[in-house]
Length: 622
Image (cartoon, rainbow, N blue to C red; front, side, top):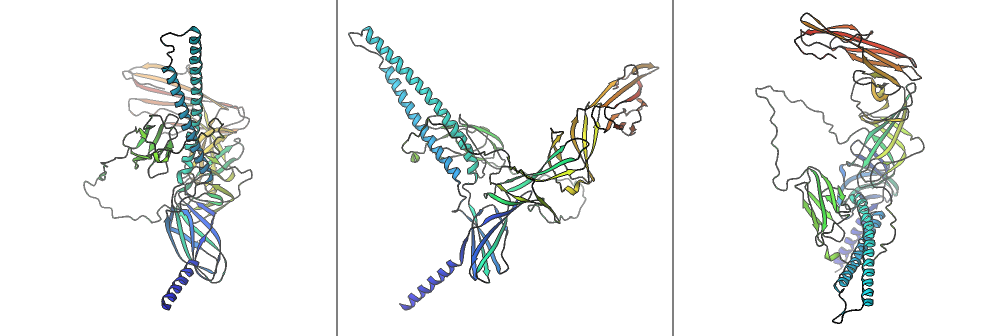
């Protein structure tokens, strides 16, 4: 008996000892390094530890983290013994208070709509009863007074019923519209509410009992950034203002609140293995055979836009605000007031999930562009109907759930640029908050004032406009990468362009837009242009005059391009007569003038050529 008690006490002491060596850690995201694809999240915690070995448990982390990327680092007297990770299906992403409020509001609206339907049903029954009992009097008939009173009652009551029914329809319309809007917002907010989380266990060995700082870092793939530039040119005699910005997006299931952001041009998802050359054998009939494509026989996915209507299986009424989602993804949409929806299906998915409050969830395979669904009421969820202030005014939805969020800062964004061996990092010192909602957020990185050379170029044969081109020498020092750019000239938006920075040139050339202050015309000179016959040949003389005027108050450099025709057959002879000193490319007949125009200066250029060809042949000379 004593041995049994001793064994029990020994086991209990060991269990308590083991329990004491596990510690649940409350950590905060301090820094996020965002790659063009993926992000490294760095969490930090201050932990009071006893001497010896302790298992630190980090709960509630993103389930999308790459387990191979997990790193832990402690103070000097703390040794990291081991790291492990597993998915926690019980501890799911927390539902925010905003979601709870909206869900409660949906229930209230649904109850109110049910009460309104019941009230309208009562009015319909009363109307049917009045109409069914409109025959008055018996065998003795009825006097005029009674008839008038009865007619007045019928008219008055039926009119009142019609007015009240219409008023209830208006209230229902307002409530259904609000229900749809709430459903749309919940679709955004609920995209990650049911996702599992990760749990990371870090076994540490402390040399002494004290408070230690522990950093936990891991890479999550569902995040990234892309560059976005603003190019602002005040005038052609001033430097170009380059605003280097980024659009950051993340759907990691973890909100980044007041974190230090580092934007890196690196990409951890790209293979770092050097490609290897295999032996290159030449044989006859060395064509490449395309691989055989696998054909899905059953439930073949439909790729494209799917449309349909969601209705109540019992009443046939459209279910406004019903939610449609693609199974296995966070993508979804909401049915409109008439129960209609529209959804773009990805190529590898073939099933939709339809849900509506108080109805049984239904899954449906998609094999065509039209999928209509009738949902059945969930009898187990039907509770007592309560009228909840359906005549009150809606408070409206709080916040925005779609579109680009711009994080505005009045002060200049301080930024440190660090050039690493294989990437460049932009370290932004002002903290940013970026929620996990898969929406792009604008982050201002840095502003450069760039010395640029401005040139105009025009092709009068094709357009009367002069196009401004900005040339940026030694552009590589600005650490730019490929991306979209918004162009502004003299405060006017000129449109969007794409900066392709893969070239090897030292000077970056950017086409900014048209400048209406430079007037250009190209007209044929009829007095010099003529057609004549000489023997068996026909001769056509063409003369063109190009007029350019700089109406600006500053001098400009302008390149004008035109051309002489080039003959491809021996029977067509071309004589180049006049080109006003242009540079001529003999191979393609291209003419180039490099002009320096003073303010208000005007210049005239002439092109003249003659074409001779057999008179029995047709030839259009322009």
